[in-house]
Amino acid sequence: MIDSLYGAADWSAITPLVIVAVTALVVLLMDLLLGKRVGRYGAIILGSLGLILAGVVAAGGYGLHQTLFGGAFVLDGFTVLFEEVVIIGALGSLVLFGAIGREDRVAGATALLLWSATGAMLLAGAGTLLTIFLGIELLSLALYCLCGLAPRATAREAALKYLLLSSTASGFLLYGMALLFGATGSVTLSAFAAPMLAASPLFWAGIAFFFVGIAFKLSLVPFHTWAPDVFQGAPLPVTAFMSVVTKAGVLAVLARVAYSALPPQAASALLLPLWVVAGISMVVGNVGMLAQTDLKRLIGYSGVAQVGYILVALAGTTAFGLRAAIYYLFAYTLMNLGAFAVAAVLSGDGEEGTQLAGYRGLGHRRPLLAAAMTFFLLALAGLPPTAGFLGKILILSAGVASGYLWLDALLIIGTAISLYGYAKVIGAMYARDEHRSPTTPRPVVPLAWASIALCALALLLLTFHPFASSVLP
Image (cartoon, rainbow, N blue to C red; front, side, top):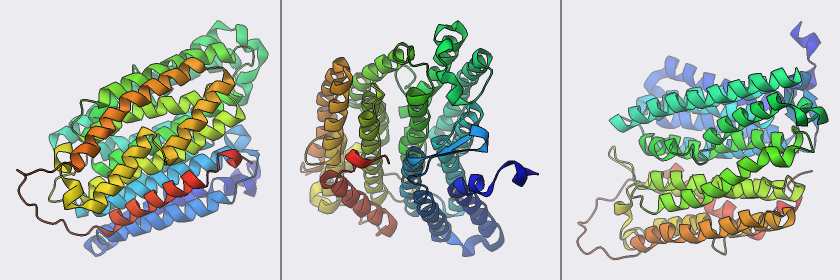
């Protein structure tokens, strides 16, 4: 019956999602049947292989343009690129469990992380309100559990805070979806572009509530206060995952709505409040990071600003702006994963290497780690010669071409403010700490070191061989 409704092409389009979801089941079954014989690295390696296979299969869909499952899922170059960002983010976060976390919990954490990634991949190709809500809840439900895995009270507090606030945001999102369905009589995004809806108050109200939910998921001002607290309380690999994968999935939804699911004559007015929020977020996020003494909180506030940068590229809803946004999203993913991998190498004995006081003198104790962290922080700051700098140049160009000069001005101001926050960490790493007692060398963490090397290499390739001019088919 199901096969008669949907053809083989429909099911092949979601094969990458199925691979990731089934890999999570296999990891759990292996842990159940083999127990300790699987070990920490068994679960990580199996999960990583599933993600790599999904990435290879997803790449095969690049260049296609298909609307599947009655419009519920769209397969095109846009979908494939966001799926690849999610897979890279999940893979880079998963390997960090090799350095952090109780061994008996790694298999369960791996499965939850893979299921959450499946939700984000579903968002990348979501073509209806129902698919969007399903993807967001699948993404979020696993994260509620992952946030509470660390053996400390702040982790349980972070999980509860994220559960309550995220559920409230989902309520706004669902209410907006109900209003949109009432205004259009359809849950398909393509139906929202009908010109007659520009004069519908119900449609305007639905979009407003919908964007409130999206703004919370992206941690935009004034819905950003949960992010630093949850980032700090969650285990380091989970924080790395949330910092990139959650944003990638929700940005895919926002971009698809902004570009193809609004009445043309009303699109600018409907989106303007979102661009205003993005502008404020660039300043507030960078100011908030200045006083932080924990790397996870610092990146949490930085993420508020970084999403604002990406929205500047999307503001004009131009093809060039979308290419610039995707380019910067790839670079941002690598920057964050690299910084968290450095923290993972410095972690041990139940302590995460995220306190900035622990980075003082790192340039003299661990010069390679300090050099890598400096490179990732310079990229986050947008200084040359890094992919972060090139990405911001592309974003500024997109803003100028679209006429949003005031957003470009706020981006420059926010970047200038952020320089102090990143320079503070870099300065501490290369300052001599005469009073610091000698530290016991940490054991070698191969997966974390490999992640650092791959992220740095990929960032260099993005810097000197940018694909921004040909990101979309």
